[in-house]
Image (cartoon, rainbow, N blue to C red; front, side, top):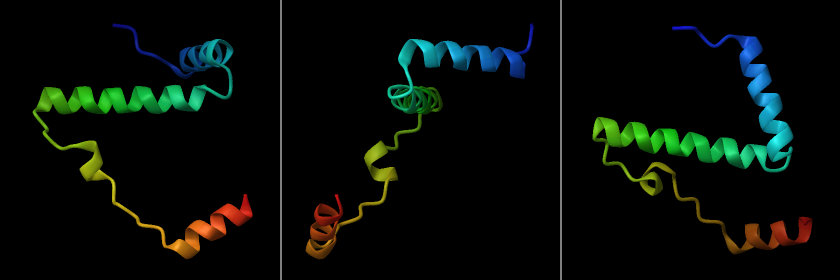
Amino acid sequence: MPSIGPMELIIVLVIALVILGPKRLPDAGRSLGQGIRSFKGAITGDDRDEASERPVVAASAEDRGRGARES
């Protein structure tokens, strides 16, 4: 079975960049990563929920006001 080398990866990334464009490429990569993670979780029987993996950070009223002023 042939292995994927660095030249093949570069070609695939260039094609993806041309097709998706620079603005949508990070979102596509993120979606692909989440899909692979959920597929692996389904295969291994991992029942963790994505929401439980991320820590919940509550912003104070002062932080929310500061973010609105900086934008």
